[in-house]
Image 1 (cartoon, rainbow, N blue to C red):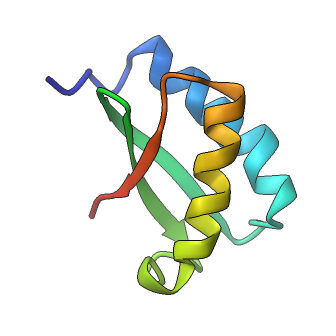
Image 2: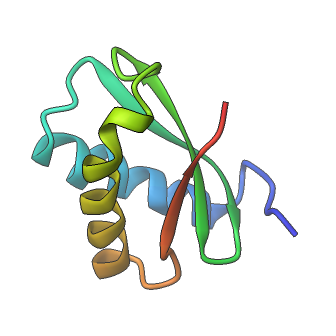
Length: 82
C-alpha cells in the first residue's frame, strides 16, 4: 500500500533530495519531488528542466538511489511517476 503524500517519511526523503542530492548533482533548474513511498520504492516526479528527461538520466537515478540507500536505508529504488 502506498503511503499518503503528507507522511513524515516522505518529508524526510524530500529533505534528503533537496539538501543532499540537489547540491551534489547541481539540480538548480530541476527538482526531484517525492510523491509517495511504496515499500522500498520512492516514487518521484521530475520537475523543471529535467521533467522530460527520465530515460536519459538513468545513471543520475542510480547515483541518487545509492545516496538515498546510504542516508535512508528503507529506500532502495526510485520510480519516476508522471
